[in-house]
Amino acid sequence: MPDYALMAGVPARRKGWMSRHGQKLEKADADGIMRCPESGWRYREVEPGVVRCLDRSEDEAL
Image 1 (cartoon, rainbow, N blue to C red):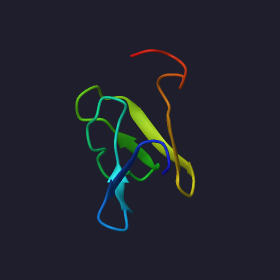
Image 2 (cartoon, rainbow, N blue to C red):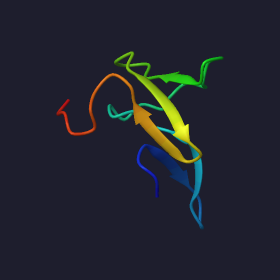
Image 3 (cartoon, rainbow, N blue to C red):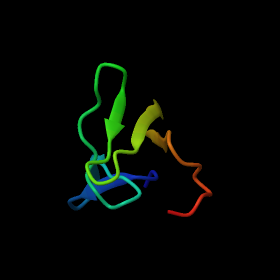
Image 4 (cartoon, rainbow, N blue to C red):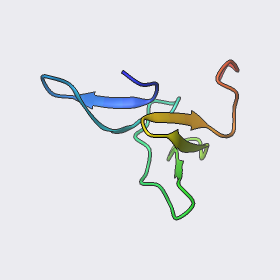
């Protein structure tokens, strides 16, 4: 299962993306940016099936 993936069903399928704050990410804008509705942090699918937070390092604590 990829990082930030929202999975559902049996067998599980990806239904969307989640933020580090546990919120479902909004649809990507024209630039491919998804925003967390709680924190406002930006996320981008950097390659198919791989999402990264643009505002914090993956190693940085919340």
